[in-house]
Image: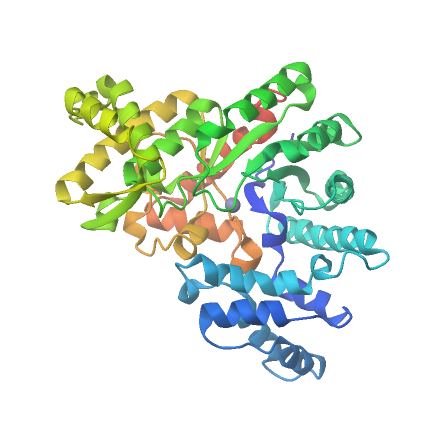
Length: 452
Ligand SMILES: [Zn+2]
């Protein structure tokens, strides 16, 4: 184990780590790229049709400012923020340039894709080494609709590259991001890989991308299967990494918060973002929102079950009223929409609910991954005073600061730590101590393979 003052990156997606200059290098040596799908999504999100080929041509001719123009086009900055479709549109530039966009029928498709991934990963590990990151867990979602062989090839290549990370001074680890729709699809492959060559470097399963419509409770059998694997192969155990409470347009704030608590209580080792858990309720203001009847019923069941705990934190639960509402809501079609109003009082109550949920999560030992730039630009948390990190720290929750997609955000882990230091008005020593604690939150420590 290396604890020589180096940093630990615990939340980063492989393709999100590709920096604009690495992408540009890749494009400069690529055959003709079909930009049309990217141009379409960019135009839909930003209202103008970009011409990446013209910029790349100017870079080829070494025109002043052309590289910067490319960077502007690709990086998802503060000015673009708050809307996922804009992030996706910028990310689509990378997708268009990737071998992923080539016809699968092209001879040598799989090999070229594996080589591309390997080249990008090498560059990413070098970038990490340069900024003092000594341990990095990288997540990757294999194309979900492909034959398993393609996923197997890509993940094997990732593990091989991870095994050579030490040559660069970075202990690299791999986590597989699974489809929330069907996590079982790659499960057998994951188990085989974890037991195979370099399997010790495969340290986690991750759930990311759209969370709406995928309540944690539906993953309960899958979490059981992971635990069963971990019992059977304790030296190849996998941590459960779970993005939750990051995006919750489709439900009540109480439900969004409940999902975070549920994921932790089900055994997720680390929670990605968990904004709903600690964001300042003030930031929502007085508003109304919609929620499905099925979700409302789950919330009422939660209220009834957790009433004593909630009441300890000052939330008044009228059990009879909740039970009456539950019987009524249970008669509705689960997909029918209910309107919920948020006035000042309800927002203040939410704060108490958050305090209760945080106290419950503290008992589970789950770690919260805090990715400030991502939260600012993807979740639209533009006022630093509203950021959940304040409440997480007050509640004594263990947090790991991470950079999520440092390439497309053009940020670094030290930048993210510096934001937290500034926002919390901490000293250099305090933030260094926080960064050091992340060593104890690595997947292999959380599943008991290694001591923290
Ligand atoms: Zn993420």
